[in-house]
Length: 220
Image (cartoon, rainbow, N blue to C red):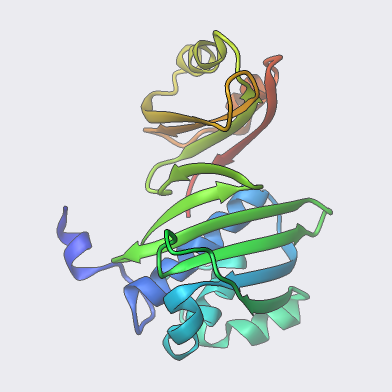
């Protein structure tokens, strides 16, 4: 724990979990989709669903989808800015189950270039977040580090090929996890790095034969 875990992030209030964390979740969803958002359906669970409107959670989530920072003074007017920008959005109440965090949200997104994606995660306090699902695939990362996400064939040597490429390109991996549904199917690597990853690094990883998709989330 550091001082920012205690005092919280620089933000527009009123709540670090319901406001700052919500902005970061929207930012993460936008970064994962990889393009500006044309349409968003936003599913709210638990406390986000019950008290989010009073805390400005809905405003903060839309602000994040537009790429705004947690201290952006326009957050209370995010709906108006989104509508002016042509971003269509709607909210629904969902039940993600008893195991889901009370501050859980799921996004169904369509990008300006036609890409579609689903992102789910939770605001866990102090402005911190955890992303728990991308396009229906369970995983876990916080967005505290630049992050590479892969979807790849689960076969021997897959991890070594990706880490080898990054090593040759001077990218240092701070930590990594591998998630899969079943042996020999599809798996996802989450690689958190010490430095931002550029497009050439991502292109090199994408060129590996077992890679289905690769995404880079440098900041949220």
